[in-house]
Length: 90
Image (cartoon, rainbow, N blue to C red; front, side, top):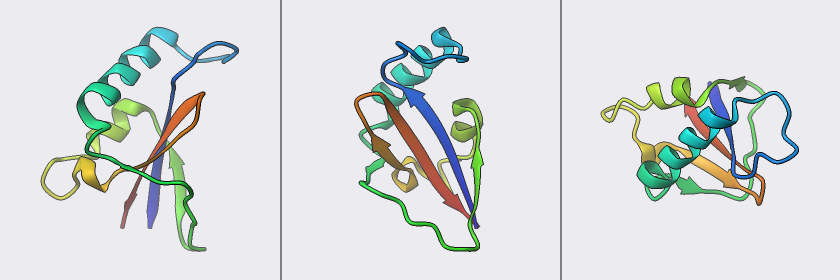
């Protein structure tokens, strides 16, 4: 199993090494178009056979084809500082 994960910062103050403009575009896209369809979770537990892959929001979004994988399959965690979006694909 592969757990694809991406992070979108809600607050970019004190965050080093990101493209703030792209992050803000990704944040607006997620909050406006997809957040209501995704599932908010408190914690994610991984099996020993799960590989975690950190990818960009654009790559993450491309995994959601609208047929086999839907935004309702996305699990996300929310803190005051960021969103972490996750999707499990076999």
